[in-house]
Image: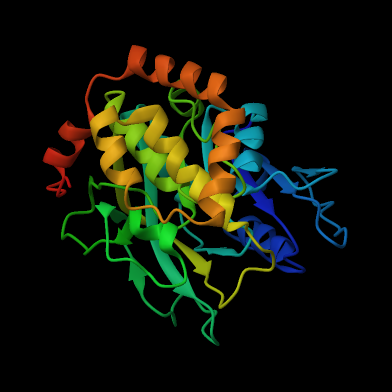
Amino acid sequence: MKKLSIIMPFLNEKEEPANTINSIMETSNIDQLEIIAIDDCSKEMINLGQKNVKYIRNKQRLGVDACRQIGIEMAESNYCLVIDAHMRFRKDDWVNVIIDRVDSNPNTLWCTTCVGLGYGKMNMNNHNGKYYGADLKLLTDQEKDRPCRQILEPKWSNEKQTIEYKIGCILGANYFFSRDWFLRIHGLKGLKSWGSSEPVMSLKSFMAGGDCRITKNIEIGHVFRDNAPYATPIADLVYNKIYILKTIFPKELEDKLMAYIPKDINYNAAMRMIESNKDIILSEKAYYESIFKYSIYDYCSQFDIKVP
């Protein structure tokens, strides 16, 4: 069995999936790794025939979160690292650090230091800044072009001096954890396309009695872009917000936050999808009620989050 499974979804990324895999191979012992590369129906097929790479090509687009869920479910190892397809790695002992951290905190979602790359700065030693996990806001100032992002939004948090510490929300597409814990909290189950994956995983990990933590002993470069090479329906983004509210939030807080979502064409489309999935939503809500040890109010108290 491989020591670590790496799950990497991608869509229309051209050479970047190969660049990411090459960076992994150049900085680690590839024989220890299982790389699951999931092509979410890109316009053009690419060659990822490198050693220890399992290449899966979807017949239709499922969305990045569904791809992540599929990859983790099929992983051979109980140690999983989830990344985007435009990442860079340092030549150090990052594989063994991941395994050690998961062993020491098996009921924890971890993220690493995110090193910002892109815009002409592609060297890990010449970067655009470092980022250290996130704080989660139940309610933020409304953004004109993305109104659904007014609620349940992660924002980069300030760095603390210690090497490892608790954070409110993982962020940066550099997450690792025990496969067993991810499956217990139903990971990314139920989300559409992309969006809100970090808040829902982070909330469920805490409420089920686990944690979210960052280790600054691992730094992974993330190539940030002006625009994604694919479009995400706004209705799917709205759906994900509502899905989270209806599955893990108490009714009184669900109603308060729902009131902030603009009642427009995307909301209407999202609500139609919610209605068609109501049996699944009720089943998931019942499951979470059976495993949760803490409430969303406990979470807000822990991380000093204002409750509307």
